[in-house]
Length: 383
Image (cartoon, rainbow, N blue to C red; front, side):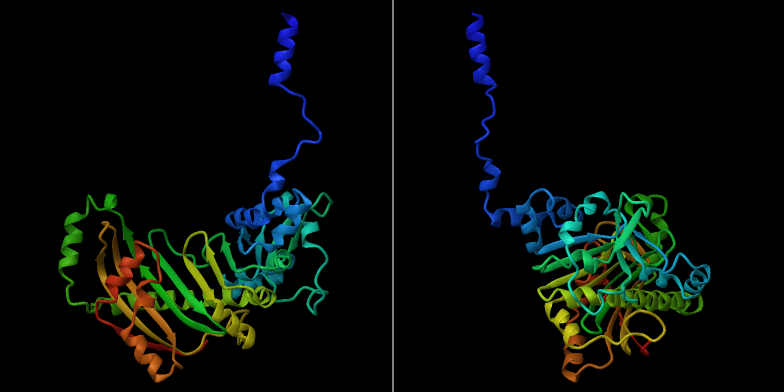
């Protein structure tokens, strides 16, 4: 009886055969690359590339890469005078130093993946415009070292879709205020759409204010901007929103130069933030335009020069969306460079699809509703 039990145990728990084939190795490279492209996140890909030599050779072929920034630091923390100078330059100066602090021990082993630096004129010393950095955790006393995203991404040879996500929007706004923007760039600004509201009320917030909201909505039915908009600071606030959004967008664009020049395979580049405040978008034609025609930098700060602009503004004191969300002081601004051909300007005046489709729901519906109202035109000089 004991002999039978021993035989049964051997059949249930057989000894591993050293010559047994690892069926995972039988998966084709194309299937593994499909998985890696679904992963996308550069931290996870860093872990994958040190699993095996095969993974190490496949990760550089990934086409879809996502880089998430974990924190923002000042341009120079070591000098108090420089810090004071940065502070005087405004909140957007802080955008010039971004740290990918969450990429720690997994990227300690990614050093093999990064490999030797490619020979270039800028590799011997850090470029003053290289403001993005990846934090890696060393075992040395130095603690954390940093790599620019250009270094982290330089051994990805086939990137087509790149998404970089900042930890938060650059624009400090009060609680309850809505401010979103989307900007498309080539070598300079192609267009920008800004959606703002002085306050946002969700259906659950309106139970005690239903009568007030109804009264407000009924008093505005002709699409005109009320006189109070000009006297109570409403117009001034919208101008500040517009300029701030354009500065944030142009600063982001400036930071992308080294990545774009290094990766000629890019078809799509998005630089957004975790708050969903702003999105900078570049398609393949726009990316190629920047490579052929270098950007014009602002003389005042490290950002792309914003050209002279034509703007159209739509305003609604009270805008109720189909899902019950109410936007107070809803404002939509559509921006294009002033230097356009007559045909392009005429086509743009009749086709506002690029404005109404700039945002995801429910704000896409808000934009669609606003463009049906009275249009106000403004101009802005280059800055």
